[in-house]
Length: 422
Image (tube, rainbow, N blue to C red; front, side):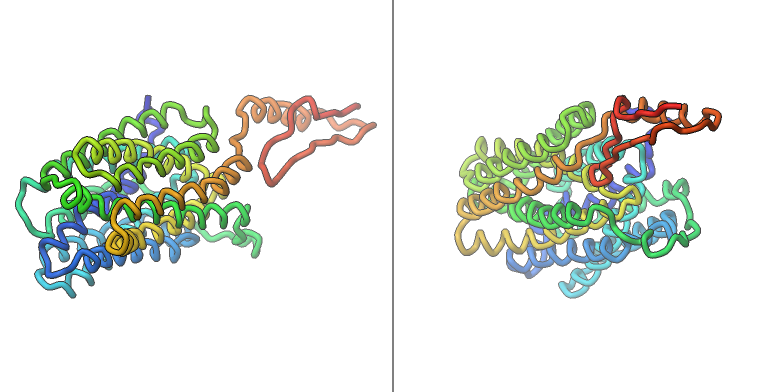
């Protein structure tokens, strides 16, 4: 299914290292709460600070990856992640932990920015994204299964992120170095499809905020509202991430056959229902059902959204900017979830988040409809016709060749619209 010759494994590994911290957010926040003198809200704020630092890296580096060099930036990001998370795992004092977590978060965001930019330049960015999501889901599931059995303390999940960054670092040798900057003028720096890109970025901020408001407090829902043990909650999370693996595998097999609008629109609506169910759970079956269904759908929709962002700009800038906007929502999620649940309770929090998702699903679907993938057959046939026209001997032109193009949609004209007479 995934051919080794065409799979960008360094980018997949870099994507996995960059996304691991958000995937481990519940156990990171929970361990900070239990292992350090922090309240649940304060622990959620530390988790938000980590992800905010990650988002800032994306915004700063969105248009600089090619100029600085993917290899150099990736190595810098992984080194910062390894040092930051590793030091945070060993630090006993809260101020030192917070500072080191911020450094590690910036490193994660740098790695993610490089991965998103390079994946957008691939022939099939959706396929590379699904592989990256498969990797991070599998790794996070393994961490959730093992960490509860290795002892208490805040350092174990942070150490897992640091070790992952170290393991991925050697693969960066296959990434390209800096390229010569283009001198095509200001137009080369302008972002295409600005209205669609800004709409998608704003929606992704809210989308990720809703997801991670629940994800950041899911551990507490299982422990305090559903009255489960930490080992049971960890097992539920591992199974949920395993279900996510199956979902992403299915999304990778389907590819663009369903388009983007249906997976994004219908998937987000189903996620809203899962969030409401999980937030209202008072026993193991309800909690497990909500978490497993939600984690099955979440990476599927995310893979199509990342592919949609990549289609807006072949240089990958919108992919990075939309990803950074998503990280901003992710950053605010733990704190927002902690505040909402503390003020109104988990069920009301879930209802509010679900309602917000149902509101933003409309503009997200509209952007997806406006960016329908091109039909490969039409593209190939049109290219053949144009190539044939170019190699013909020059003759007197009797009629003007009309090639209607819709640049906003990037949809090539059908071959039967090409007319010429000689």
